[in-house]
Length: 171
Image (tube, rainbow, N blue to C red):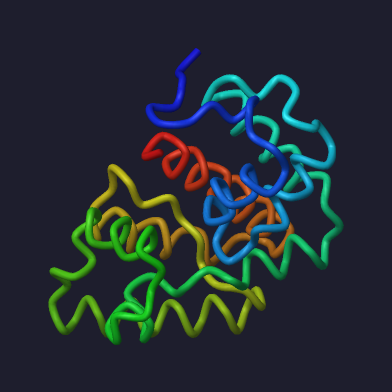
């Protein structure tokens, strides 16, 4: 059981909980709100417990809500990254994977794959990039673009939950 360094989620009221965890899921504070509403702070003593509860909230949401959350994520090495318009967490995650070090050819390949992936699936490619480098990310992109839509939808949710765990651990 890993505890948070600076907060105790089980002791927070609803608004404080939402404020503390609003950014764990990209532009989707509803995950924190629904988690609080479902549990009222009960059983949220550790990073693992908060992650499990928030993951369950996402996975129990309806398809449209899940799709909206998936679509809230930026493209990897996309226009928002180049223009410096990512959330602080996304910017840090992409930089940690060395995406900012891409060669012009690699940026071009990311752009091509982002467009093809979104055309095929209707949402951006999601990958928890912590611990990966740009070559591994491109390789995953090249493999996953051939999956069925349902497989990729589920993969996107799984990757989003991995990202959420990394963000919780950073707290």
